[in-house]
Image (cartoon, rainbow, N blue to C red; front, side):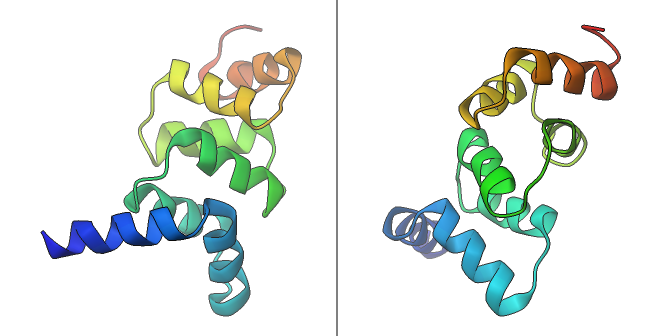
Amino acid sequence: PLRRQRQMCIRDSFGAEAIATALQTVYGLAGGAVAEILDTLGFGAEAIANVLVDVFGWSAEQIAGFMDDVLGLGQSVIEGALEAAGFAADVIEDAFCAVFGFLC
């Protein structure tokens, strides 16, 4: 459908960080709202995690909690996204301990 074509065009024409920065600057949207929009546009967990770190300054714990609660992503996907965003293994373990109650 046409809507899907528009989403792909936006996603392919602009990077996640550029879109996030524009949404934050122009509309004053917070990280969670921007992340949901990026998810709707088809950006993957790694791109979303990078945006939440680089544009909004989120911690590994914030990202893990959001991706679990709001986006409904699995733990292995979240772990990969946190790794891609540059978090060290011990930081990811601490985030998983806080969010999921294990790896403590």
